[in-house]
Image (cartoon, rainbow, N blue to C red; front, side, top):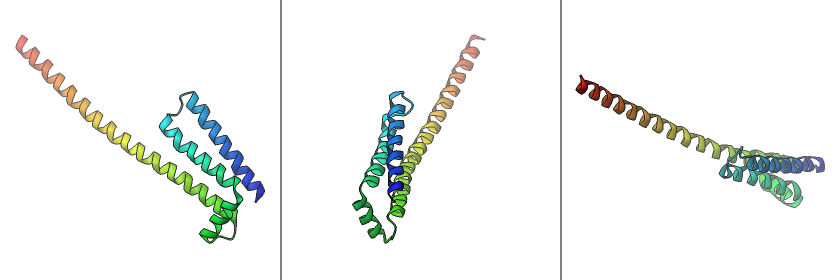
Length: 121
């Protein structure tokens, strides 16, 4: 169990460092990095607190604390992925609305150009 906890701790620290480097190089926006940093901190806290892990495994009715850790890892990343799915959905809706507005503006410009050409002829 100790080896798994150490691996998860190293993974969470690596994840946090990767996020900070990506944030520094502007590869990721601040509002998205917060979710990932929170996930990394949660994983690190769970991997370093065996008492919390034992309590969590008893709460979930599991006999194996590492299994509780893996379930919590899955749940944490599931929440982060859900948050990004809602963000992507909002961006897609905004993109569609923007494309519709551009199409309307192009139509109006073409109508004005046709009207100007007809008045000049």
